[in-house]
Length: 196
Image (cartoon, rainbow, N blue to C red; front, side, top):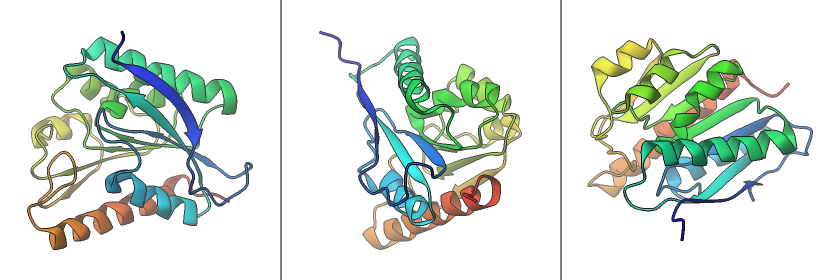
């Protein structure tokens, strides 16, 4: 049985705006769904600011190959586009940042959180960005590399303390990290792709 399965790309339950509102496509991590705070809190901010969010849901097996992960991301994008057309914004985490090439081709603004800077194809896709884009990560993220981030020529927002899952050793600091992450995502969306 295939361990890597797309379950759907569905409206986020927290959407407040009507269907005509600008859309944000959310592409989560392999084992970091949109229910976890590093995506749920920015999503809440975006929906309060007038966005409609659509979230990919998938199951990713252990040790997924790069090609399989790319296929899963591509399948989610195709499912969304077939139904809704191009989104106005992409918010992606980790595995979801493999959508960078597609976003560049289609000139879609994007926030790439915990990007896979340890994968050459992802880095080159990020470097090809043709619309405003932002890299956001924590200083203890295993996939973060400042030199490689500079190679993408994209602006960076680095948050002190958290690792790849936006976690810290202290819950008080973790709340501060999540608040900073949420502000960064909401501010980027308001600056480059805000609803009219």
